[in-house]
Image (cartoon, rainbow, N blue to C red; front, side, top):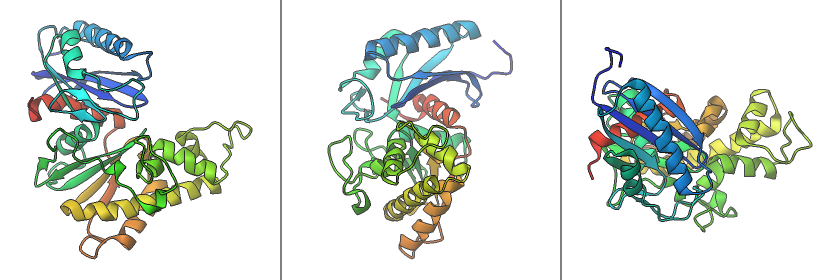
Length: 318
C-alpha cells in the first residue's frame, strides 16, 4: 500500500440506470481504484456477483485486506430505513431489492445506502464546487432526474431517504409525456437522457453521423449540437427552458445560493446551461431571479459519484 494514503478507506458505489461506478477512496478523497460496468446484467444476483468480484480483486491488489471501514452505495429510490431499493423505475430488476442485506454478505463489510442524488451532493459539498456553500441543490441529469438538497449545511434526507425527488414533480410543459412512474408530466420525461431523445424525435432530429438510423442517444444529440446542427441546438434550448422553469419553482423550497447540474446530460454544458439560466431568471420570483448561481459540476461525473458514496459511511448512520 502506498505510504501517502491515509486511512480509513471506504468503498463508493453509484448504481445508475445505465452504468454502475465503483471505487475505493482514502480519508482525504484520493481515489485509489475506480471501475465501471453496465448495470443491465441478467438479474440482480449477477450484478452483485460482478461487483463483489471487482472490489475483492481491487482490495487484494492494493493490499487493503482488513483496512476497509465500510461501503456506501447511491441508488435510485433507496430507502435508508429498510436498506432496500423500492419501485425504482430506471433499474432493470424488479423491486424491492434488499441491497444492503445482500451486499453486506457479499462484501463482508457494513454497507450504507443513500439516494444517488444525495450522494452526488455530498461529493460536491466535500470535494467539489459546493465546498463552503451552506444552501444548494444538486440536480442529477442522467437516465432519470434526481436532486440532492442541502439546507443550512445539512443534507435533506427525509424519513426514508426519498427527500428531493424533484424529477417527479409534474409540469404543464411535459403534460403529454408519460413517466416510468406511471404519471404524466414529470420533469424527468424532458430533462433526462431519455427525455432528450424523445424531444429530438419530436423535433425531427436525424443523427448527422448516421442519418438513416432511427436509433440515437442523448450523446449523439449533444455531439450534433456541438457541431452546429440546428435541430439538436433547438432540443437543448427547449430542454433548458423547461429545466429553468422547474428550477425557478425549486428555488422557493430552500432559498439556495447555488444549483449545480450534474450527470451525463449536463455534459452538454453551455448548450444546456445558457437557456436554463435565462429561463430561470425569467420565471423565478424576484427574491431569487439573478441571485442563484446555476452551474455545471466541476467534478468528473464518476469521481463525484464515487466520492459522494464513499463518504456515506461517515455521514449517514443506519
